[in-house]
Length: 286
Image (cartoon, rainbow, N blue to C red):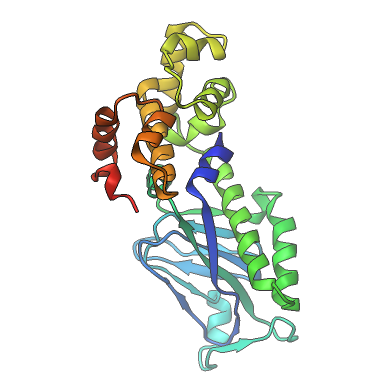
């Protein structure tokens, strides 16, 4: 189901910095509020945020801001003391000069519904390479493209960065507390019901019919769903239908057609629910 979610919201990564620095360098926040990430691809550094202790970032460590906060990436304290009078210099990754290279990028979602995912994540999370075996293969490919700069390297780095976020999201979901919306998309016992809703959103799903997909009683299914996600089954069903509806409307489908595809026989009923979800009528989606 996580794949269905990401396919609907359509993630794009746009890398805006692959520089390697030496001297007394500093990288500041790029765009406050934007979803972004940093990954150390050479050397090490520290991240500073007001009100927080510095975070040491080693090679391969990944930082994700669901909504970017003010922060700085700077050299380690011992390195900074020895380079305090050296101006910042951007060097080639191929130069045999000590330095720190950082991959920085923005993460863009074409669907406004991804705000629900961002809201469920912590304000910042750091994934250390030693705790995530999937980082090293991606790091190797990213470093190769950064060093070689062949035709299409920028596009490849963007695609690899999208993979970084998908892995990071899956990694973070496993650390989420109970009663978190994101847990729903990786819960194996509830997966058959979610797949049924995803595949056939137009069906008149009842609690009993969805519970039977998971080989559970109505009561057990309902209680487990609420415990895992914090939502009732009906709340989730309505939410998912509205995500699909928004996507279909953006693709230019007619309102009546969309209403039917997501399980509403009445256009008036569909429009009422859609406006409650998005604050605008379906006809305003362009």
